[in-house]
Length: 313
Image (tube, rainbow, N blue to C red):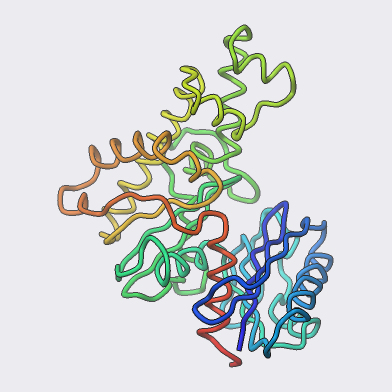
């Protein structure tokens, strides 16, 4: 028996058919369409295409979305990027797909993947943060995914690190969430500010060409550009502030950083680790801060694991 895992993002939907041991047998990536109903149809389409290539029966489908989810009903709460807000996503998907469907927050599923098979394997208590366009998160407590009293817990991107910081994205009413200080969006903002301050520098040149974003800024930082590295260092320090708060609260065995910007590795993690170790209470400094194994595939793999563990229920 195989399962299908689907990871819905703001710009793309990534899906894979997973076989025994959760190995990826086939994967597909399609653009995320606009509108919740269109997203449901796109998920159903990629699922059907993957199921058609299976050599055995597909038992169930897992779907991760960047949103709060009511686990009892499968209803999507707040979703900044997908248009799924308020939809009975689980029921709609089951109607379209014709298989058991299990829906969860994408950060929860990334944590599940890293705990079962990845960088956090062997640890009962895990904090995971996915650093990408925004910041997601997931918690494993006692080897189980923590979802909170109403399924809305572990929104780690909304840990406040600067009370008078920039306004948060989407429908978050707060200021200075870690998402506003260390995400692809915030890094793009800060890189553009650095470029404007020195238009004759390498960042300024990229800005003038219309090519400056977190990815091209990271390329410059890797190449040793001082201005680009300074932006990533500042962002990393803010990440370390958030990690210190989370370790003080949860005392995890390990802290895992995933998402697209985990590709920065020590450019981001070295200042984050330094700040975390400086700020955390001595008993909670024991948790290593590491890069995720699955990077951008974590949500997709975790969705497959969810489907397998929940089965055809």
